[in-house]
Length: 365
Image (cartoon, rainbow, N blue to C red; front, side):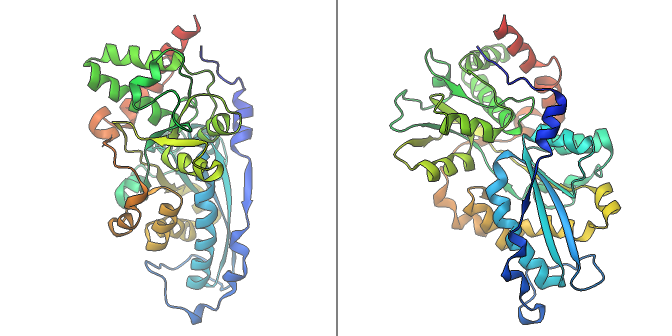
């Protein structure tokens, strides 16, 4: 029986706005002379008029990007110092993607948002009018600089012989996944399971029953993907973790292949995390140019290689080839082609009293 972690809306917001200062931008590398190096690829001028200005950006992101942006922020600080002479300090905020979107809507002054799915950024525009409605046209790839997917992380040797989605509904299999109401990764998990079941069994009704049986095997719903990873890896709960691909690789790096293994299912989602600057906030703070450059540089060769090193799939074809052997070959479907886009998905599956809420209510009876 599923149990959700109980917390008030206020406490979720407080958790979401917990910000960790990233100090990588203040390293000695930032002190290199601007005149001494070649102009970086894709360089654009910063907004500060005075050389040597101090600039601060807040990147509000989702759970599993801590390591990615820790490395990227240090690289970007050096890049921007060489480009403009200005010093950028980037602060980070991490929590479940849905909770992070609500935090921005309710007043967290993010310069940029780098969230797990497009719908969360759409909500910031729809509910708070903070982001231009055409935000997905401003950067390549619908503003998705890297992609990921959902894989299974299992105990070493795969003792429950978990090979595909239908193994997750078997009696005695404990599945760890976060709460789709607060976690973007959890929504990708839910939709991948639904798509698999609909293809295998042929109807929406059978897909719904399949997903219900899967959640019957979920003992606890953490609020975010990193929380679920900690539940599986550190607390030792569950037989299988439905994980972002990068989280699965990081877990192997942490524990070693002697304790956990990755299993690629026959079908999964092409997860497309999206990014945007927050128009009204950067206009208010005067940080529009560095915020824009911060996101544009994610598409540079340097930014793409950092994404690949942190187990995200680069969008640049040349860089993607460099990391191709790192990733399993999976059949990946997209949200638009299979489900009709995020607005339709949210209303049908994850809105109040939508399919997910009804499934959980049935399991609690």
